[in-house]
Image (cartoon, rainbow, N blue to C red; front, side, top):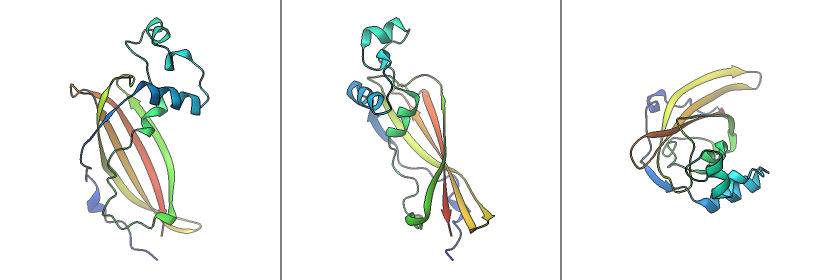
Length: 146
């Protein structure tokens, strides 16, 4: 059986990463998830709906990949399962945004189940705009079977 994940990793943060939210990325993402709403493609439709620019669908935040905070942690990636994902938005992501992403480990815990002991890692990714204001927080939980 693998060793438990060291709880001293709680609080560890990734190096910041700047990403640009591009109009074409938003359009392709909306197409991929089957969302035909014109606000994700057309500037006039977005403005008519009250947005200052083309907004991104809420789950688009998943496509903005921060530096992985799990780097350097001994994880058996073949036994890892993505368990949960949630988002909290201060405002929508918009085409033209430059977002700084930082991921941190918010919690590490273990649970015993029918198939044995599992480690849980809860990661929070924050996205701040160029002015430093929080745009969103994404919380992701992964499970690793020992």
